[in-house]
Length: 268
Image (tube, rainbow, N blue to C red):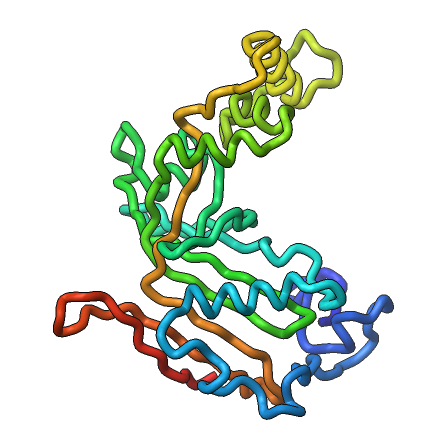
């Protein structure tokens, strides 16, 4: 990737050029890096994957990414994408996967005022009607692996959210109550140099006073767990010359009325 000086019609960034891992600014055309981690064993094969269950397969890959020495610092980090209706406008943000169970992938967040709440559950004024479809993307660069999850979102029960909420440090529990996530923070003209942070600090102070001396703070009703129940899960392994290995599980309804998973290889 090369940086170019800003000129009328000129590209500010142009790829490929040089090495993306180089600390020096590239000076001329180059080649994008190759993915070579699995070339010695022929890449990813169907026989390497769980034939019936993508969640079990994800657990295997996640466990491998979590091993010391892999170079993956935070394997639980992923991108959550949602889409607002009726506009179809898409938004994405980085989140942490906190739980994996037989039903799906669980994150925790504010679902009262956040953009994800608007996209998933709609708004009172009807400007967004709610769209439960969401996706997660995990990228484990040292392993040259990516996992994409597509599915429908559902809120966890309050008791389930409380169980996780109790594991958070007190400051994070106070923070969950205090933040009106995504609300605009207007500067306080009475606080010199304030850019809006004073409002948030005020909310935190009010929450601390509200729960002073309280050890078991209740989980806010607007905050909690969100489970993405997968309908499609893709496992991607980088390969040389961009001829990557891609396998996708799709949930289908069997003749017996029970859900099952198909597994297919996709062209890169």
